[in-house]
Length: 192
Image 1: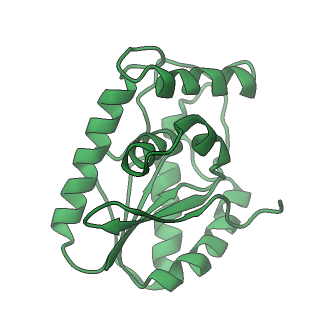
Image 2: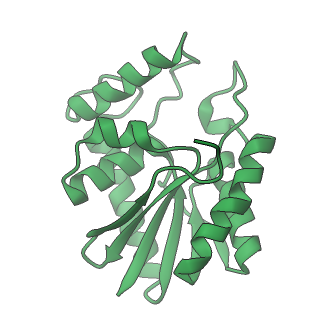
């Protein structure tokens, strides 16, 4: 059975005034990618494909290089679109806004796309990557909100608690072609 490993990118360097879509990995984030690669080695990946956001690209490149696996980027794997939202005052406020995307997926409540729109975009991008890579296990490096929108629907999970558990990085293993949930690794490379 083939596996699809959805990876949440590693810890970014938060830069006030720069949209999150432009953030790069922090030193800690790069260090965690090495531990992530060690964990992902068990999946004998045929390819690592990343969102085009810098933090996802860097996560994917570090992992692919460590594993000796081909790496590429793909369109439409990016995070829920919210470039018009600056750095929020505190983490609690941010979490409440993201939770509203999960709780009201058909309404535009945060950013520039609804949860349903983000899910459709991300699911179509996944289908495209899977079609281009018909053999072997795949890793897709993406982002917490779009991963949660996809996994929660595929596996019947409550999205808010699932999203809150995902660390930087984290990964979810799904079967192909059915997207059955195989494993969730909530955090890689950090002290708990």
